[in-house]
Image 1 (cartoon, one colour):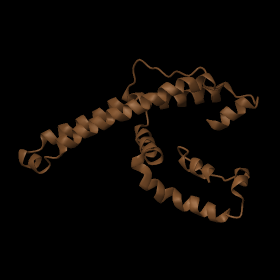
Image 2 (cartoon, one colour; image 1 turned 60 degrees about the horizontal axis):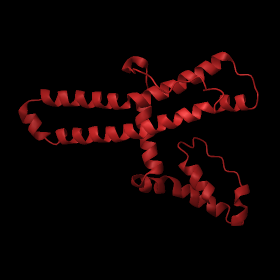
Image 3 (cartoon, helix red, strand yellow; image 1 turned 60 degrees about the vertical axis):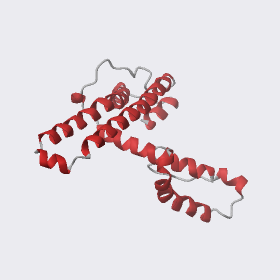
Length: 185
């Protein structure tokens, strides 16, 4: 999407097909965010039904599962609130985008058969947790500290007040936490 958006900003003509593809992709992401809660509850319901079909003796061995399901439902509700906030901010984002100004952020109904990539939503939520929450601090240290330490060692001869001139390529920067940490060096 960034390449098409950059092309739009620089005055490069974007084909109607490319513009349509960008809008469709954006809307699929918004739909997946909106469907997360329903999808998560559907997954838990299936697990609960499987549990209920077990013989009572097996249920006794797995008696922790009903409490786990309740905690998962609570987590799904919290995650949906977070995703809803992202969707609300997406509305202001599309207003400034030449590519996405025709995109929708509200859908009356979202169905599982819409081809939504729910695994990608779960992965994105894990990335948000790792990159921006207190709970993810240990994992951030494990992932990013070796990189920032290496950059600090490599560029230690640069005066601190001149480091803003340095350029560091961060392919696959994810949700931006590594870029944020590098910019603070």
